[in-house]
Length: 134
Ligand code: AMP
Ligand code: ZN
Image (cartoon, rainbow, N blue to C red; front, side):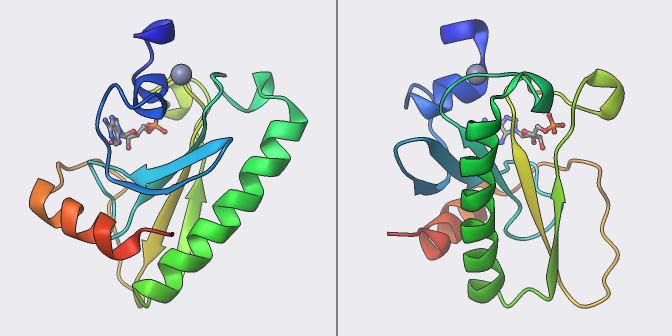
């Protein structure tokens, strides 16, 4: 596995993911321990660890994809809003050292827990099919 990095392995197709969007520079897939229905991660295919070591050009392109994917998720799942999270360093809760933006859809005024809990693989598969952007 390149860089010993699970998200690089996902980007290279070595490890399966519940992919909903892919283009030449980025990939978006469902988080397997979702905070809410449709919780998605957007990553650049090129490895970097966090915000500070990622080139500004990559960040600019990535944020365009975050916007596109968030807009699609919000419309498809009828979400009322969404949180964008991006953790840097263990102290901030970063567990995977490949930069990623979380898109966490919100429904009504429902409180959610920002603690991971294991998702149902069948539900995630069906949701990824529903959310896939051609
Ligand atoms: P962070 O705490 O910001 O580093 O978030 C890492 C996220 O990656 C967590 O929410 C994990 O549930 C998620 N995650 C870890 N492995 C996978 C995987 N194989 N597929 C999808 N999401 C993953
Ligand atoms: Zn990586």
